[in-house]
Image 1 (cartoon, rainbow, N blue to C red):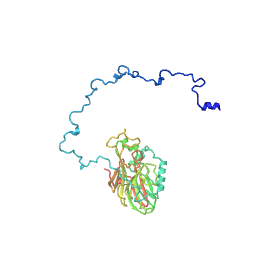
Image 2: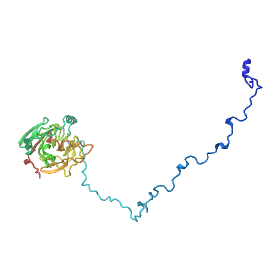
Image 3: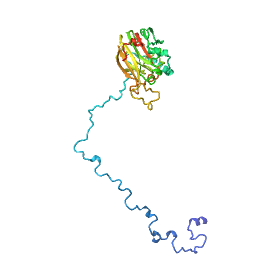
Image 4: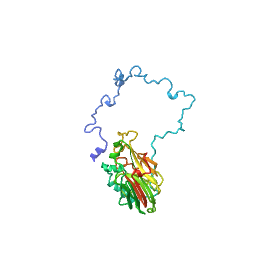
Length: 369
């Protein structure tokens, strides 16, 4: 217990020695407690180093007079008198004659005959499988036959009826009641780009033919019989009316609308074609009045001006320019029709129709001027 008592009880002043031996403290306080005099914080003589380095230069800033405002008040504060500012004369109607015509609005369906969706899908797939044939050089005999109007017609397998040659360039035909859509094509192109293009021949080229509708009979599935006349590049699905698929245009007799690569409902154009009337369709190819801009033209596009015209009973009734402004959402362009491919005459028929076709100009009611 004595050992723990020495630890927990009163402790001696010294450890391990006699308490009578004392050690006096030094005469001055410890260094950390010494009072510091003011002399220790006196700044050194003279200004701090570098004090004169940041003084501004003497005199005004350089170019001080360059930004003085011009004499007089600003232009907007000049004295205008008591007259009010002029207003735009909204009563003046701008001259829009030089602007291109607005695009014609197309229709989703025809009010007359409409083919089945399966026929349309089959034709679209067929056109994807068989691209348009590039133009070829005609033999002299072929070209002379076309120029003289001695053109034959090819009867496709979809055609149900009779077809016979009456004279040079003149054909007569009739289809059966309830007949399905069929497209007759001329045996030779009416337009050869390698020979007829204005860019090659440096002259205007016009193609044209006429059809006389002698009678209409019973139609198909409630639709009235009718026909269409137009042009197309080949190959073309002959179970489709001309104008419905790529590389084709036509005027349809049942609704009087024009179709250009248009698988929908066409665009308003003329009145329906009636029995007893003679109608014709032509295309006029010419060099534009304004020289073509080859630098800005897109590759594959035509620089030929093309006008399509329609006649009824020998009188030119209406027409349109092939390169008119198009509806970007609905129109599919004019591929195959812009003067770079062979173009064949096309006659579309459905239902019962009795008709005559004339390629010979001596039999036309319309006379070129």
